[in-house]
Image (cartoon, rainbow, N blue to C red; front, top):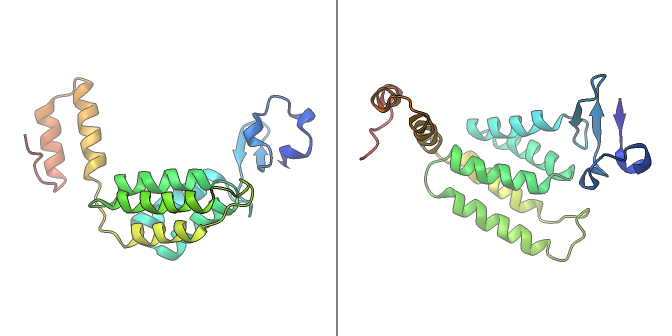
Length: 171
């Protein structure tokens, strides 16, 4: 059953106000799934965007990023793009994505939230991320440290990490 919660708040009194105006799908178990403007499931679109960036598929990544943006999820798109820049890409690309986000914020400073401008900045961020050399070392390091903090054997973890073809972490 597809519904637009903004149509009648009295029918959905427990729905948080920030959700009004967004389309969602409730199945027979009353699990809510957020939908994009064209009816895609939010989680699938977010995942598809990140996978397309990892594969360097600019056209597909751009399509999904702008689908989220056009559906009112602009802030989420930026959060995801910043995370992808740190999680999946080599170098200091996060600074470039942050600069594009800052420019987007300037363009939208006095614009109503329901009429955002500056999708060109999202497109540029997607292009940079897709073209970037891919590297997951930051994510691997984070997992290594968390595992070590959980009491797992550091020597075994380091050996497992090196088997994956990565350089030894300097001490």
